[in-house]
Length: 571
Image: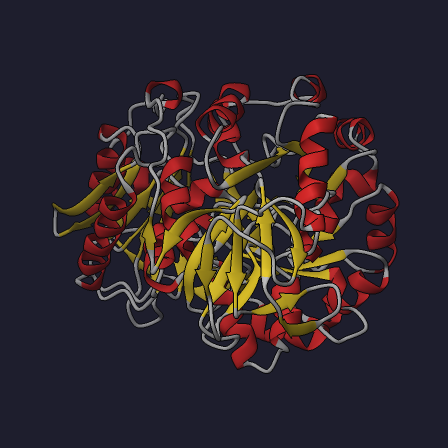
């Protein structure tokens, strides 16, 4: 900013120059004082310049409404929405979201450095600010096959780039605590910037060691005692409420007046259809206040708290000198977003976007599928015992149980057991054509027939499939390969529904409304399988993630996450 521009702003704040707009008659949520004040708000050149009766070029009547800072999601995997960044902007802006802080490690695990470049390129210039944290764990672990490897040298190439703020979640917490060179080098290279954490259930001396490296936050708390210890040791606690992982109710008692400014609300992973139907951060605010949280505290947790953690200056509040990103709300309980302004410009009203978002290049990040030939027999599990380790689903969590169960055997092979709600699970490697296929068992989907397959499988994003017979599993995996990425439902040897995800096998190249409609059609087809889970594809995507306890499956085999090593399927 030059001195002349600054002087004009000061003149407007003094009242010697008309402001661009004045919001009249509203009730201002002040995240610094913790009060709601009946006051007019003046904006000049995209910045709040004062409170009171200013001369204005434009008067905006917000009589009886609430003015609050626009919302910010402190931890989001944008790819999990299955939307490219411009389409996410179309979905999230009408719900009051002004910025998201993303870890692009999904696309980075598929494409490496070009994947991060793609995310920076297609999110440039959007009315929704997309900030990036550099993916610290590509691959996430040595227990799976990814499409790329990002060392400290590749990450340093992004340091200092516009909208790159620091190092994303250090998922390899066992490696960092044990002093593995790769983990140490990455954290050391970004020690002066924000370094996000990821350490489910870590406590005691291990947590001390992890935090000694300078880790600043954690979004993986699922238990109150866990969050209490981490907060007491200096971590910022990101309370997650996404499509699958729902920790809000369990962790909300943590948020007291004494510690609330150290807490944030985040989504982590959220499907496109849920954003359109239920909202983004406004959905979390409604839920939190309904559970008893003070509304102003809740708003702080998606505005100023987030800005202060990530070091964004003069954002996240509606006070003089701060950027005029604001929402007009009907109440502080329903959180119905009526209008959204970014830098003082209207961008959304009554759920409608008022501006165009840029188109995006599709060819830069096409899916790359190198799958070795496989057959029907590739999914056969030869019975080596009458007892097996089974992945047990936990409602509302991405953590799983480690179960030992009797298996059903037919003709010497393990098969699905409807009485025990046990289905077959497969992970097929899709990056290096290794021919790796991990086979396992999972309890809790409720499948009675068919198979579900997806190329979204955190974090390496191989093909993951759950089904009750080998024929449908084979067809479902084959369909994902033929689509060059996507989701599909197969029943009785027929593909009932599919959704193509051509951008790295993770995101669609379609408008948000079409993606949401495609997800709905998939849900209808899933219902025909007898599945009892509300979000089966999101659940499925996390069954291949070997950094979340307790039992997971990768293309290389069954992983006991607590031991951070492979275990036999059979007991």
